[in-house]
Amino acid sequence: MDNPPPIPPRPPGYELRTPANPRLPPRLSPQQQGRPQQNQQPPRNQRPAQAQPSQWSTLYYPDGSPTPLFDQLMAAIFPHLDPQGTGYIRPEVLSIFLTLNQFQPDEDLWKSNLKGNIMFTPEDIADAELKAACEAWPFDHKVVVRNPGRTPLPYGGMPLLSLRGLTEMMAVEHAAEPERGHRAIQAVMTRYGVWPHLGPLPRGCLPADMPPQIQRRVEQVRERSIRAAQEKMQANQTRLAIEAQGRQNALDLLDPPWVRRVYY
Image (cartoon, rainbow, N blue to C red; front, top):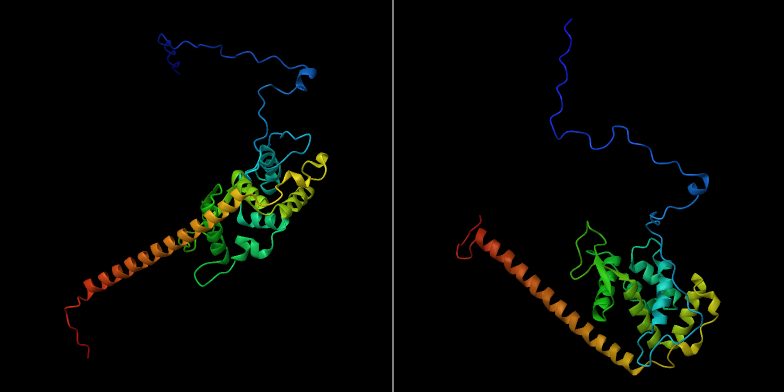
């Protein structure tokens, strides 16, 4: 039997740059094995620890805008509403939070509009009303589709409030009704165990009455909401008229009005 041909030599430039069997890294000692590595990454969904205040101070400026302490308080509350760390809360979660803040059902815009019809679900209609309010103030949010398989409500969509949006909303609500706001904040802190070392929230941390700036803002938002609703209604009527004209034009092409048809 013939011997196999010899392996030809490697062309220049194909030499191995590293040893064929590189040395293994040195084995760690038992003491070193127990130490965490410096480049070890933290868990992905782990939230950074938030600093806590050492004492109470005012939650509002004289004009009714929230102080950094109010922002810090809402940042401590938000993870309890968004345990998955998505950065947003659904309308259902907001509704539950408003109930905890002593809102009556008719004061909850989303809950009070849970009324469906033949074409749209109660959630779709309630989402549209809440979305309109978030746009009128405005409160920071994003809009997603709740039911991808259903006909979308014109100008609708499910609004998801961010931490910033929820902070903006509750800052206005508590400044507009500070007596209820004081009780509501205390109830929320007790429910979620936020800052128990501070003790009860002093009433003086909130305005004595609704600041005039907040009252003017409420009136401006009401006017914007009315204008926006009227514009949407007019736009929807125009859209329906255009669609109706388009259908009529299509029928005219199939059956021109100048052609007389007699059916027997």
